[in-house]
Image (cartoon, rainbow, N blue to C red; front, top):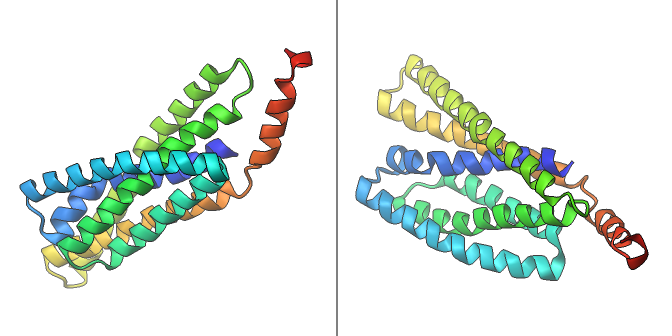
Length: 207
């Protein structure tokens, strides 16, 4: 259940990562130098996010921490849809760096928590395969929607620039959809039961 949820919401994360620079250029007119600064800012906040969510996992558990990070990312994607300026985009991107780091770091932590004793390598390998699958499903959906929506708007009489911008905004909604479905599927992951089984299997009489 966790891997299925991860496959879906990680698609949203990969889509945001892959198309962030395109969003900045198409929707907000950012030039190459500004895009480089934007990427640096996001990477800095990534470090902050990984630390903050690492602390949060220790305090409230992996599932709740992951739901907070995915929910935060979902809210920020919706904010991008309504953003109108470079400053807004940069602020949203900085916060998204924190959320994305939380999603990625907490998800890896949960794989370690959920893996049966002596099988962590197998489960991390499966986790890596699921992650690779996310690397093409989400971006393919985003690219298809952006292109088809732009063509539709052009056929409706919009100029090429406006049509491309509207197409991007339509595609942004697909990121929100992946994140929303992913956080919904997380509801069915029973972290407490998994921990109980792990603790029971690691008692001295079972070793």
